Image 1 (tube, helix red, strand yellow):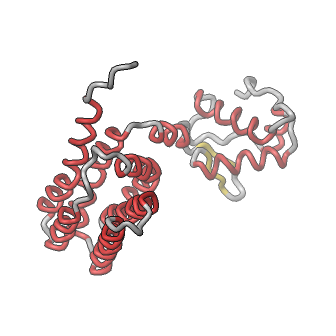
Image 2: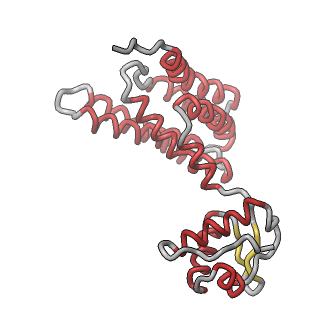
Length: 246
C-alpha cells in the first residue's frame, strides 16, 4: 500500500513528507475512512524522524485531508486537496470571480431575507456608512488615491461578507471565506480600473432594504442587480480589442 513512498530529502523534510503523503491520498492508495499507517511505520517508510511525520500529519489534518481520533489513529477524511482548489480560485480571472460571487451572494441574500437579525442589518449599514465616508474623502485632493481605493475595497468586502453571514448557514459562510481572498483581489483590480463603474451605494442600500423586508425574491433580485453592472463592465473590458503593437 505504501511502496511508492521514498526517503525524504534533507533540505525540507517536513515539506517532502507532506507532499508524499498528499500524493498517496490523491492517488487513491488510501481511501476515505481508511486508517493510515502508524507514525512509526511512516517514519520508517519515509526514513525521517517521528517528529517530522507528526508535523506532516498535523498539516494534513489542519487542511482537512486527515482526521485524528484519540486512541484510534489517523484516518483519511478527504482524498482531494483543498489547497489545490484554493490555488485554482486564486488563478481565476475577475469575470470568473464575479460569476461565482453572483452564485454565492444571491443565494445568501435569499436566505438572509428569511434569517437575518437586527444586528445583521446594523452590520451591513455600518459597512456602507464607512464606505460612503471613504468615497467622500476619496473625492477630495487630500485623500491619497491608493489609500482611498484600498479602504473602499475593505469596507465593500465587509458589506458583502455581512450579507453572506446573515444567511446563518455555516457551510455557505466557510465557502465564502475560503473564496474571499480572490474576491478581495478582483475588487482591488476592479477599483483600480478607470473603465469599471463607480461603487453604487444606492444599489447596496437597496439590497439591505430588500433583506430587511423579509422577501427572499426581492433580496435575490436586488443582489443580482448590484452585481450586474460590474459583471457587464468586466465583459466589455475582456471583449475590447487590444491596442495595436508598435
